[in-house]
Image (cartoon, rainbow, N blue to C red; front, side, top):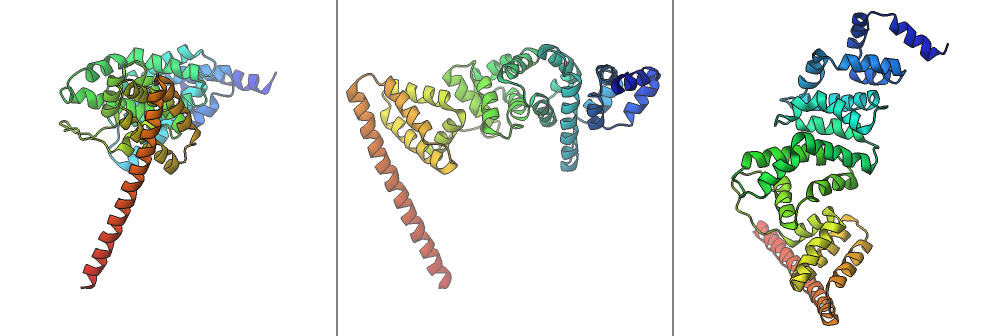
Length: 333
């Protein structure tokens, strides 16, 4: 008899009440390690965490917090819960894992609260290391069980500000559950693209404003600085950037394209992105332009725009130096 079999047979002889008392004494992280002993232990633990008493104590009670200290504690607790559910459902197919887990958290997801960040940390811990196909299944599962796409459609096709509470609800869920928990850009970009992909370009812009725009019930939109637009395009990736610029190219807005491209180059230089990405983007835009005169016109526009932006930077620098000198003179008087 192996040591694992011996350990399992020992726990089989214990009354379930005593086994639950033992588990009550362990931390969530300890229980997650305990599940890895054997399949039988995993089944014991699954039964234990499936009780309403454990759910109310470990999930719902810790979902809300009011102070920064409670927030840090809750986020750490949900990170441990993510490991627990990851390990105790390890042998289940992805769909079955998601059904089991969501059944424990459905009550939390039905609420709108700052506790969404806890669920985001939980989800990020749970699916860390999963391949892209499994992550697609996670997104589709969440959409199906939270009516996410229907909620998105209701706010992005409506008049801005009319459904402000639904906009806030959508922002909190998408940001705190799907986007903000990921520290690396590729992972965050993957989830952002899943949110944007089902919608046409105009609706994507509206959704981005809801997710990352100012948190006001009434907003008078102001024109973004070109550098901010360029940085947003860089963060959204090649496909989205190409869609935006290609649409402008088809409509003959070459001066606007050239200014955006210049600022995209500046953003890449500032933020350390490889310049080959911009080169490929320009090559793709060139393919959209049908005739040689149009392509030559874009090259001229880019040259002129580089000169104009360089001149603007120089004038701004000189103005800043003069202002600083005047301030120094005034302070000495």
